[in-house]
Length: 237
Length: 73
Image (cartoon, rainbow over all chains, first blue to last red; front, side):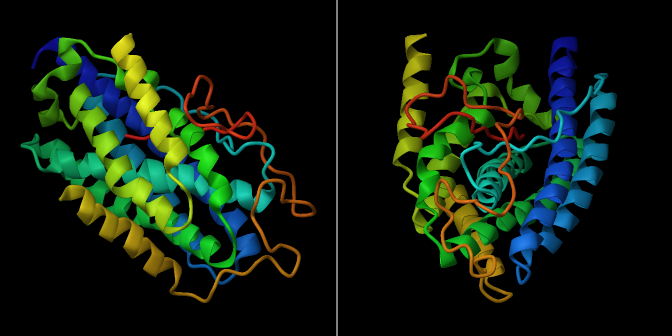
């Protein structure tokens, strides 16, 4: 395996370790917040389990990061991400939609795509274990959104979806990447080549996230505009 | 095909999961909407997040600044 490829794979697994650690803390915090206003909901218990899952995932990712020779580094602090103008319950919904309906849904699509390719056995074991849990984590978000939409108008989230998306991926996703990041060999190590990653991200938005939001009364139009503008900017650049 | 299946598994499956235990309650009788500006008396909304804020996002007309997103795989 070429050193540059090994480094890219290691960086991806180190990044995922940090993502999983942050997710563990977020799930634990959101579980407590939701239990405070929706005692009947199954979501807090599922989120507490998800937090445990994410700790396990982080350990798995860290192991692979070490295999590829990359240090993990420190995870970001457990900061809430909702705009300050939202009240407490709306802020929780914002964060659940951003972290589960968008990010976890995208993660499931990424994992499913990776598992359809020939992958190193050690990597495949990790991908399969994580994928099994991430499906539940994605569902948790849609479950909470469904509950909130059943009692209230959640359409106020529509203009916020672009902010969620902008925080989910870097601008670099829409730009072209170097040959190393486009190498199909990355797939064997559990990493999507850049253009495939972009394609899966957009496909998941168009085929899963946007229709899902619309199902619960959240217009995807601002998000579609954001996507269109992001793609256009990359072509201009 | 992948995306259709994911929609069924995640979105539809999630909605079913959310409906398994009673209906969501509007936090006593005080709260009947989750719309912008809600939140009086139920705690302080979080400040702008540091995970990834939406600086430079374009196309979406955010009603005010400060929303962010969550990075994933």
